[in-house]
Length: 109
Image 1: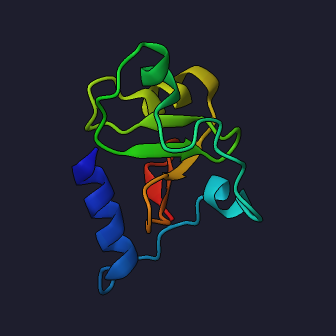
Image 2 (image 1 turned 90 degrees about the vertical axis):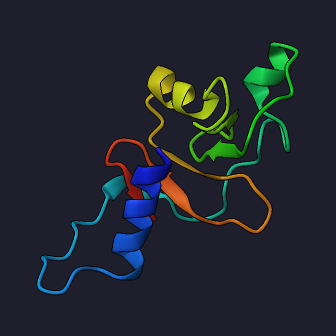
């Protein structure tokens, strides 16, 4: 996942000379306005339900506010939430980070 995110970020920052521009992701484009309130600010909802507090980074679903742990965490709850619900876009829930990710198109915005 980190490699995919890094490649996406590189495409956004640099772009390739002579390459066609990337098509815009409709899911990322549709996310406008204020973010939903996080359901469990600062903690992974699913890890907490399991009685665990061991995660690397947090991600928040921009459809419903579910906060889950990233793919570098043992349980990968943010990705599991997408797989269970189909909610396509999440954002980092880490202080100072504002990037977003569309699971459907593996695209960063």
